[in-house]
Length: 314
Image (cartoon, rainbow, N blue to C red; front, side):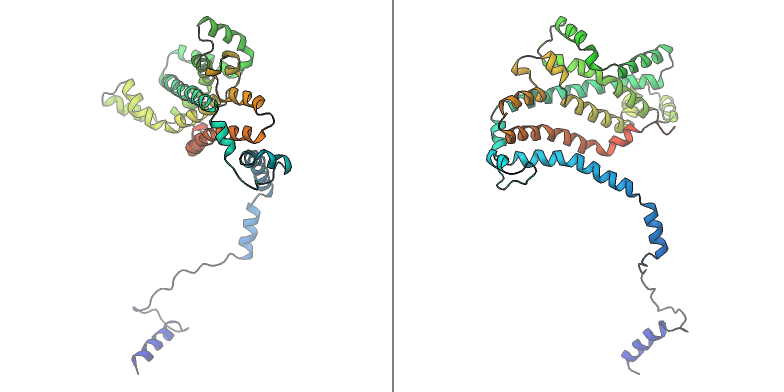
């Protein structure tokens, strides 16, 4: 018997019905078994058609405005007037963006960035120590102060805009970026403290005790323990403050007057009157103003849900 016949006989014998597993047999690779009819029925039962339709409808509601902004901003005025509003651009152009960037848009963008960054830093610097004191403090005044702070959630800014205007003018901050930042931080602080309080309650008390045994004080616990473990809550608060400060309109409208202190929302309002007949240019300005908000969400979307739901499982 030749070597080829021996190999063929070995393969035939290993797959036969009466063959016994030998030492030289190789195990067959795992085969992907297609799901049976029962498994398909179970899979179809687990799917929720109403939820899928709702998600699709929500995607259309959110995606259509973004599609309209981008497509119209890339079209010429003649193309926008002749074709439909949702038609794709026949000859895309960036002239609208050049027109917007050569105007006052850059100043508005810088002012908005200053207000947003300073508001984020101020809210985080105030909210984190306050939440730490609420979680670890045992004095009754801390609980009373926390309850009084939560009352700010029930008071809209529109209801107290006149007292805010009087306070800002008495403090000689009218028509300045500081006059926008202070009330913005004040109205965003209660939500930030609430979110960070829920986040810090997730930190086990044994970690504080271990740090205290090693000789660490409250400030060291705040720096080495609370700050690293509260990162999801901090990112959530930063995204929340960034979106609200970037899109703020009431405080810039009432507390500023000159063109040098305008932010993007006020700038878009003025551009609406300047580019009344030039809708593509206005859409280009709005697209540029929306991009940072989308960037804020893209950076913090992974931590956003975990930060908002922290503490609710207890």
